[in-house]
Amino acid sequence: TAEEADYKARIRSALLARDAVLVAHYYTDPVLQALAEETGGCVSDSLEMARFGKEHPASTLVVAGVRFMGETSKILSPEKQVLMPTLEATCSLDIGCPIEEFSAFCDQHPDRTVVVYANTSAAVKARADWVVTSSCALEIVGHLMDKGEKIIWAPDQHLGNYIQRETGADMLLWEGSCIVHEEFKAKALLDLKAVYPDAAILVHPESPMSVVELADVVGSTSQLIKATQTLPNPTFIVATDRGIFYKMQQGAPGKLLIEAPTAGSGATCRSCAHCPWMAMNTLPALLQSLEQGTNEILVPEHLVPQAVKPLERMLEFTR
Ligand code: 13P
Ligand code: SF4
Image (tube, rainbow, N blue to C red):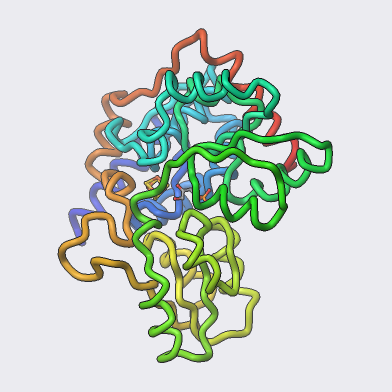
């Protein structure tokens, strides 16, 4: 629309004026993903967002995603200004893992290596030995297991269960979950697969085990996008946030992409197949933040030296 084009033009100038680059997650509005691509920014999974922000020479990073992504960028680049379209965009995994309780849990098991998902607060990262994302969790936990380490895993129980199953590692699991992925339902997915027998089922590992068990491919957002380009199937049933369809369609234009069924498929479900916090990233909010310098991410200084260690360990391991 004309209004959209106007916002986009103003955002382009504001990016230039501020020496800023836009870093967007695959779950954000396709308009923002396209804008990031067109302006030399990046659209990616949470691991590559972190790496891109750290390595890019711009003095300001505008992170379209949820709060932990902005915090990660700030921890990795304290000298840069990090802005977000909104500071209200949190994550149920982050909310479900408060630092006081988590720290007490770790204190009870001092013999265990603490591995946390990137979807956590800066304080939780500062308490961790390793940070991982869904695209490198298996390799990192496998590596720790080979060294004979026992693990505390937080906060996503489904991803933790999946990794435990795949690696056989000794893991104590925190019981958090993602409100979007936990809504995918195995029974309805089987029914849908019967309608599309040629379809491959792609599942993000934050989904329940019953859904993961039906998957042809389990992986991070970028790994699922890649699967639509490399597998020969004409159809894909996708169990993750529907924001991902923008890049999937772009990379595999001839394929039929179908959303996996959720409990409340239909009008009633607030978080079915779309993260309500990712949805807070809008063009007007992005423009306002860029023009006025509002919604700046600040991480308490005392946390940075500790929180940066497990993040850099992750980036180094996956280089
Ligand atoms: P990815 O690291 O796979 O992009 O996942 C981030 C996330 O929040 C998934 O819900
Ligand atoms: Fe968090 Fe789930 Fe939203 Fe990802 S989709 S940001 S895990 S609530």
